[in-house]
Length: 150
DNA sequence: GCCAACGTTGGC
DNA sequence: GCCAACGTTGGC
Image 1 (cartoon, helix red, strand yellow):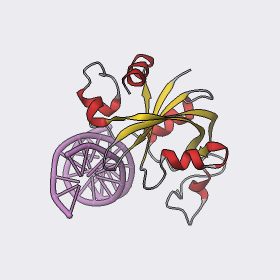
Image 2 (tube, rainbow, N blue to C red; image 1 turned 135 degrees about the vertical axis):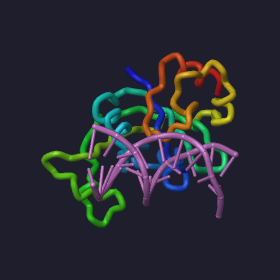
Image 3 (tube, rainbow, N blue to C red; image 1 turned 30 degrees about the vertical axis):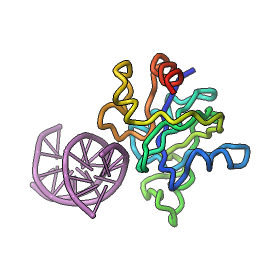
Image 4 (tube, rainbow, N blue to C red; image 1 turned 120 degrees about the vertical axis):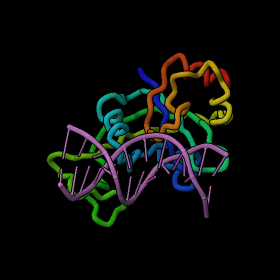
């Protein structure tokens, strides 16, 4: 089992939206970054644990935990010409973009970016750098530290 | 709203 | 395959 951090803009889709969704689940669509795509396609597995992180908002923070309930599938929006996520180079035979399905687990007392940056025990997490990855791995050690901290 | 950091594109 | 120009992300 592995641990991940997924970024989302709460104005677009927040952890509360996830909690309110049917089956408290959602297909995590719209990832259009190759490094993030590769993680989703190759490494994110059912039962992996996911930190939900709110970005581009007043207080950027890890706000809760979700669990992966379905491994990577083609993101249907890449084929939808009316979608912002449409990609003319993607084909049904070889989809370029994928998404996974996650289910809400629980809220956490928000672990703010400021707190993470100030925590000298957290050294590997890509958030520490000016990293714009929307899907990033979290080591088991740092996951446990963050859970205990928050 | 600004802007630094970084990813992507495209000409050569 | 290099790299400049451009676009996007995301914290502040």
